[in-house]
Image (tube, rainbow, N blue to C red; front, top):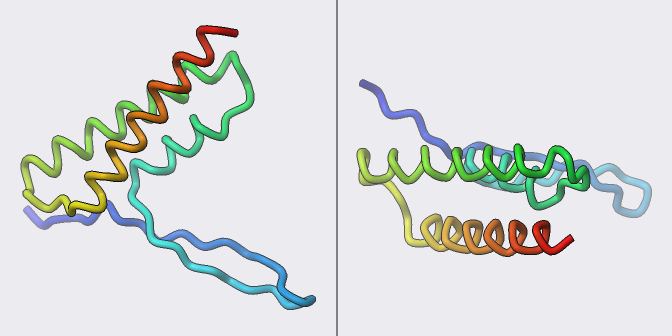
Length: 95
């Protein structure tokens, strides 16, 4: 089976002195659902977004275990994301 990387390129358009600049960033597939949860403002949808973020991270952790392809920086990013999700859950329960 061929390995498919979970690193996905992302791009943002920004204006700089009237010019549009395309900025490329490198991220991981699990970061998109994580960012959706962290940036989510709809309290009704937030639990679903958090669950999706946890699921995406779990899938990636299983892949890392299976493929042995995780980097220290990605593992740190996953740890940080999980911590942020725990904080988000605690803050939403307090509301």
